[in-house]
Length: 391
Ligand code: NZQ
Ligand code: ZN
Image (cartoon, rainbow, N blue to C red; front, top):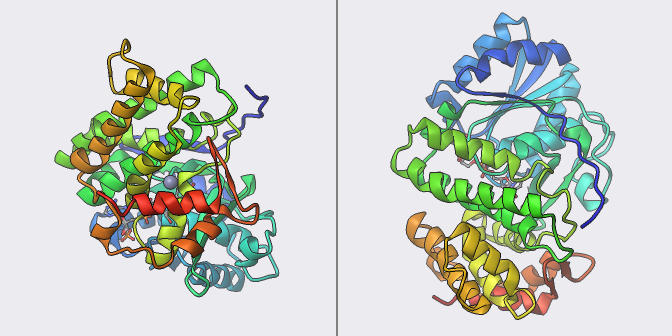
């Protein structure tokens, strides 16, 4: 168990009236705001009208940047930075999922930088200082509404990489579960897969963990496993949407990671799939996760799979540890592929081994390894990709 510093300074307005506070909160930071959003879902479901009304009533001047793509591109960041600088804007209100919020984090830092925002990635320049960012979350998945990281894509170099700084953490996030009623079945499934993966990335760590946090993580996992399918079948189920939304934030806001210092594993491997093939993040995670689990399962790691199986999937605790571990992996597959109905291998989504060598190297980064639950080399990562081609 490790020492840690805990700080989650994002203020949350949660519930059906959460958006009533948008105007007054933004006004505290600036009288001019850049409103960022994606491809238009917020115009169809009334969220745009509500947000604009609240901002206008508070006397906030609105500038807009729409069209932020899923797997957001650095060009969108550049556009946002330009608008902010030209109009002397003092805050950003991101209204969307992880893509819009992530891109806005890079804009928030880019607004006060005198260099191209891709240098936050290519040259590792710190994303600080930054202008204040606030967010209206429209789908439960990434947790970007309450963490300091963002992931950005450069299609020219086929790179999808993350950076972040506490200064880019949203100052305030507005979470109304009703807004997520319009999220499609597919995106609800992918969001659930993403939340679950964030918890796995912390749960499976090589440095030991804290009993209290492990049990919290198991509760979060149970929440996703229970409510993901309910939200898919019954999209307007408030209880399901609310549980998923709050679980998404707590899966990545720093609380459960307090005692874990292992590097995340499945995420960097997935980001290469999204970078090369522009697939949905949660889908890539679903395909990779059970293969990664099979690859790292051995006598020394089995205890963690045992805990997961017994405490989350209710597998008989009296069975042999390895047997429980194998059954656990089957349960994980069942959840992703049968219950959530996600595609179960890369072939089904038109991906072959063409770029596996490049992707494996890139996933391991400059250190040429992923120092996660089990250390992985590019050759290991390649084998995991290959396993994803099999049924
Ligand atoms: O663009 P619009 O029209 O808004 O439609 C979006 C988009 O097509 C739609 N959507 C969102 N809210 C909706 C809705 N449709 C109907 N009703 C609503 N209420 O859903 C689609 C996907 O949106 P996106 O923002 O891309 O999804 P998500 O939240 O899953 O974000 C994915 C991105 O976040 C990154 C991923 O890699 C990916 O680029 N991640 C960010 C993390 C972070 N900041 O900490 C961690 C994650 O591990 C992840 O890597
Ligand atoms: Zn994720």
